[in-house]
Image 1 (cartoon, one colour):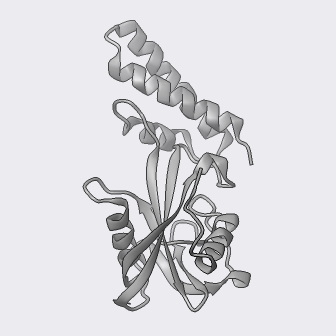
Image 2: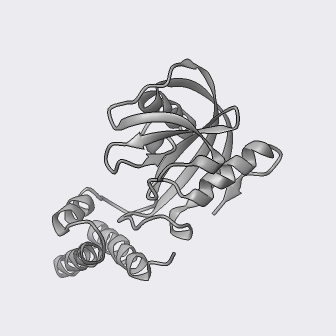
Length: 205
């Protein structure tokens, strides 16, 4: 799925954000700020985000803008994959979220699985790194890299968290409605393939 308008808007925003951060010319500052607003208008007009929400997201950005990092925990039990039901959209995803500063990708995913699904896990393998713009994700205002990390259960018990309203293991042929901003059907299918073929190298891009 191609969202050229979204790619252009995010590129305009990223270049303008860098300009705001580094230019010393007050007139260029005004021009870059106007371009940031224009990019927000494009995203708000073509997506489910309202203008105020997009502007607030962009106001949080400082300095040179780079892709954000999202981690997803891949946990299997008897050929079934762990998914959590997101409160925000009532759909299912691999447990995970934005990486917190000060924690490594694996430390982040271990924390997210415990908080969202109630399980204590340890990392096993980095299964994939996805550039979300090259896959079938729903439109997002930011550019993300998504780290899918295979983990095995050490303890705990299934339990929903603050941002999740259900948690369960699902068979490959009985997957629920997915939160496509977080993970796509083809990505989950690939995780099942990698689980059954552990010798496969890590996927990237």
